[in-house]
Image 1 (spheres, rainbow, N blue to C red):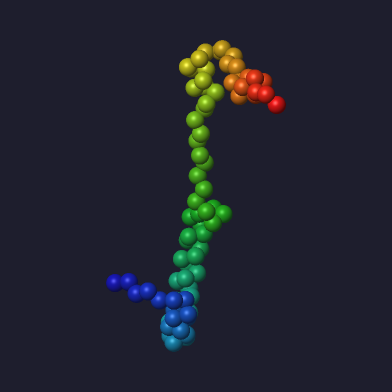
Image 2 (cartoon, one colour):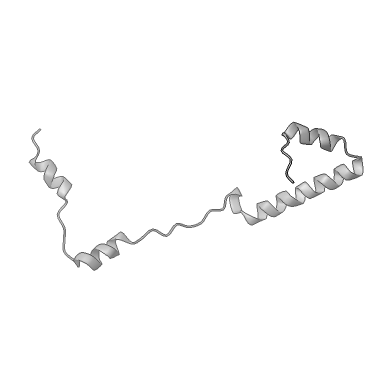
Length: 80
């Protein structure tokens, strides 16, 4: 069962605990924070993205031909 509580309600509940239980609660929170921090470097789970090699694919399709830049050719033909 899950209860939804605001942060203020949680703090009020923690303040109402006896000192021994409050210490145990904070020790558990600290242990949880250290395990989460050790699992994710820099606070984020970054993975390296492997992008496809577009140049290798172009060479595989067209060989070593030099293709014209069609955008530059179209700009040359435009009127100013």
